[in-house]
Every structure is written in structure tokens, then in C-alpha cells.
Length: 358
DNA sequence: TAGGCCATCTGGTCCT
DNA sequence: AGGACCAGATGGCCTA
Image 1 (cartoon, chains in turn blue, orange, brown):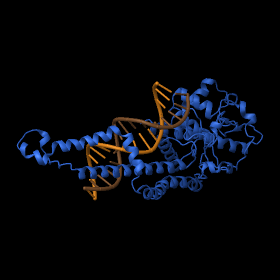
Image 2 (cartoon, helix red, strand yellow):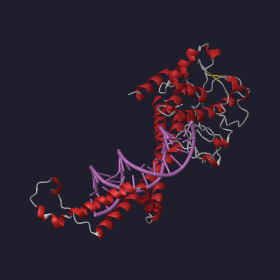
Image 3 (cartoon, chains in turn purple, brown, red):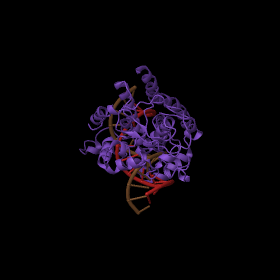
Image 4 (cartoon, helix red, strand yellow):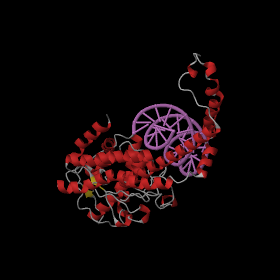
């Protein structure tokens, strides 16, 4: 069990650590390209856009010229003004001004390169966290948050030596994420879960989690935008607040060939196979709306009530109404390794709380 | 139009 | 002196 677990989880951990190294290799190339001659376009652009700052630096130069310590410093020798103390400023000759400008331009170029490297590293990070999408990129901050949660979740798997409760896993991944990103992540998990469930229950019957008050509907969440042009790959540069972005998002933890289209970049992490989509069955659980709400409030304690409701409605679906037409497409490879440990949810959840609510 | 996200420039600080 | 890093400022783009 542990061996298999490690073999599944470690590649992800290695990948998460490896993206830094990869980014460094790629970054060095970027540096070489970027360190080309200072582009006039860049400089012109900077001059055009940074009128204020440029004026300020030039004013500084003017001040130096005005002070002209070499000329008048002796006259003020012995003066007690703080401005006259310290190292004398050298006269800003035209040559010095020119050198200063060149230095500033070089610094700007380096800064651009540095930020490009940073962005490149972030892109690499995006590829190894759950829900990688070329066309709907997570924002920088969301990428970092999701990566942190992902690392924590993987570490938790290693620490506990067993698969986490699915809901806790989703909760961990979504901790602190914005609602759109939460929906995206949950949607990614849901998509693959659906495939798993479809494989398990090809007749669409409800999949019951062993020893659990949960049951899973193999329904298909269909974002209405998925079929709209806005949800097609390439329709949007970034994930936007309004866009739940399921269109081409990929959860690396469970891969099926149909997702491996060029639009997805063909890059996936090794599977953790603990993803899933849960919908609490009122009938089977005998739970009231209050109970159900409790489940979601608990699982998404990091979210506001409205957020949790939104996550519930979007990522987890609201009923089996769609169940009948749930799995008409793309039967995936089977996921034999999925274990759903509902009874472990509480301690995992408490640990999550302890960690994240410090 | 407001808000979010981003790229870029800039000056300051620290280090070599 | 020069490079790396950082944070603030600014403006562009996009969406609700």
C-alpha cells in the first residue's frame, strides 16, 4: 500500500520540486534571448510611459548639476546644513548623465528579464498543479495558493500513509482560493471523478461510498458556457471571474486521452487518484437540508457561506437531475486505485483546520 | 466605470 | 560600481 502510494505521490512531489529546476534551465535561455541589445522599442516605450518617473530621475540629475558640489562645496565648507555633509556629489557632466541613463536602461532590461523569468517559472508551476490550462491561466496569486495547497495535500498523503478523504482533498486544494478558482479546481476533479464513476457504474446507478453516509452521483456537471464560444479553448487569455473555466482545464491527477489535446499542452502530473465528486444524497443519508448544508459548510469552512453554496452548486452539482445524461461521452481509462476514506475525513479536516487557521 | 490582473519603470537597499 | 531583489507607481487590457 505504502509502496504504491509513494510511487504515485512522489512523482508529483518531484515534479513540484523539479519545475523550479526546469524553469531555471528555460530561464537561462530566456535570459540569453532577453539580454540581447537593449531594444529601442523598450526604451522608447519606457520613456513614453514613464514620463513622471523619467522626469523625476532627470530632475535628480538637474539637482546634481545645480548643487555642483565640486564648484561650490568649498564655499560652504564648515556649513552645518545636513545636505552639505556626506560624500560630495560629483558634478553631473553630460557624460555622467548619459552613463546614468545607460545604467538605468540596463537595469530596466534586467528587471524585465527577471520578471519574465519569474513568469516563466510560474507557468511551469501552473503545469504541475491541478487544473492546468493553457488558455485559461490561473492568476499568479491563485497559482501560488493552489501550489501551496497541493504540496500540503501531497505531504499529508505521505505523512498519513493513506489516501485522504476525497472531500478533504478537494477542500485542501481549494483552501484560500477565490471562488472562480475553487470552481475550476473542483470542476477539474469532478470531471475525472465522473469518468471514474462512469466506469464503475456504467448504467448510471448511484455510486455508493463504502462505509459512508455519502453517495456519489455519477452526474455530469455541464457548464452552460462550455458549449459557448467563450468556453472554447483560446477564447480567453485568462480565467476571469465570470468564467468558470471548465472548458479545457485539466486536472493532472487523473488523465484520460481525450484531454491530451494540444490545447492542454500534453503535460500532466502523475495521478494521485483521490479526486472525486461528491453529492450528498438526501434520500440515502436521510439528511435534511440543514445536514447537507452542514456538510458543505464543513468541507468549505474556509469559504464564506455564499462561496460554499456556490461551490456546492457549481462544482458539486445540486442534484441527480443531470444524472441521467451524465456520461454520454468519453469513457475514460478505469481508475482502479481510488479509495474513498470517508471515515478519515474528520481527523484530516481537523488537521487542515489546525494548519490553515493558525 | 470600477475592479482585477498584468507588465514595466523606477528608486532604494543589500551584497559582492 | 554593478547586480539582484523588492515595493511603489503607473497605465493598459479585460470583464461585469
